[in-house]
Amino acid sequence: MAESQRDAESQRDQIFDPDLRWRLHPQVAVRPEPFGALLYHFGTRKLSFLKNRTIVELVNSLADYPDARSACRAAGIDESSQAPYFHAMGVLAKSTMLVLEETP
Amino acid sequence: MTTAMTAEAIAAERISTSPVPRLVDQFEHGLDAPICLTWELTYACNLSCVHCLSSSGKRDPRELTTQQCKDIIDELERMQVFYVNIGGGEPTVRPDFWELVDYATAHHVGVKFSTNGVRINGEVAARLAASDYVDVQISLDGATAEVNDAVRGPGSFAMATRALENLKDAGFSDAKISVVATRHNVDQLDDFKALADGYGATLRITRLRPSGRGADVWDELHPTPAQQVVLYDWLVVNGERVLTGDSFFHLSGLGEPGALAGLNLCGAGRVVCLIDPVGDVYACPFAIHDTFLAGNVLSDSNFGTGFQNVWQNSALFRELREPQSAGACGSCGHYDSCRGGCMAAKFFTGLPLDGPDPECVQGYGEPALARERDKPKSSVDHSRTPNRKTPSGPIPLPLLSAPPKKFCNESPV
Image (cartoon, rainbow over all chains, first blue to last red; front, side, top):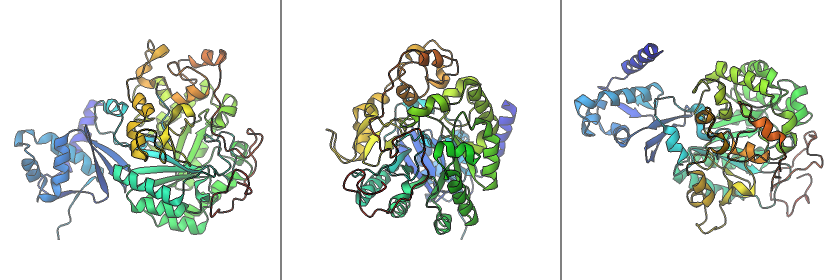
């Protein structure tokens, strides 16, 4: 069980490339909450949770940066602590809360 | 005390299972705004289902005007309430129903509405198919006309399946078929699933509450203890493909924690609530009674008018967000799973709120029900039929352009 969960998680990680232009899906609303934020996707009707303020700031700022890695850096997340944030964004990408911006 | 959550309450049926430790704790303290809420637009109904949790039938002359409804939607938009579950009565008989649906979706408030299907003709189905932000739930309480119509009234099965047919033909994807589990339909679960599959629909199964007219028939209609186990096992197996609106958290103790899909907790007054047709705000849709009335969106109960004030400041909601006592359930090893069950189910069966649920899976409900108890009557009743336990056939409802001056002076609602 634990093994397969880890496998599933690592697969999810693989779909998230931090060097690409990720954006919040245009149909996603972010509602600030004391614990972080609630995310609701009006297209898929899915609800999700952001568990701390840093990830909220990061997700909201993605549009201002050419790739997720530089957004992380700007949010004050140093290289050694980026992994959980990439993982979290991978989970959000999996449910299309985050999408790749089409290159013009 | 915990309360039954609304059917859609909390959207747990859609909740992401991302690893969020103790989010339940966050929710128990309440949020600044509900995630979603139930909004009953009218007490008028063409049917007279024996278990109607809002005792609907006749339209109430005090029902909110179109403008008052739009003001509420504006407020929900500001509060970022993601969606509303619209019900009734039969909400589609309000002449401004579609106007309000369009207004809500244009203002970033998604709409799910429950209907018996009376107005879902081909034209309406096509219109619904063109919208991205509206979900439709057709109520059906039997997989056969025989079982369904005994509860919902003659002709109601045909009405519901015609609506599903129309939605399918119009290309509306993923309609929901909403089933209240009763003693007479628990053995039809696979048939419901097949029926839903046939219409390309998703099945949604919720708990029978002894609320409204449901109080009259609950003793005869609620599933037996053996059927609860059948229901639980079926839900565990069919898990993710069937919605439950989190309504079966009282069964959590039948298996491993987390075996039931969704976030199983009562959200009454914490993450969900009910706005009724006259603007009264209750803790949850199964608790239409003065005891659970938090305030009214139109009147000032010393904390200002409007929905946000009621949500954030009402004494009742503040109390519900405080830690609740386990009472007689404190020594039970399953308390962490079921949290004592559903507040509304206890209240309307006349059981103490800090004791076991009437359908407690450990069997503590039955002796409690056998003792003498005083069942509170719902303080709000809009029933049309003199005999509340006999559903009449569908009646034609005119589209009223204005509310009637008083009860009953405009036939038939």
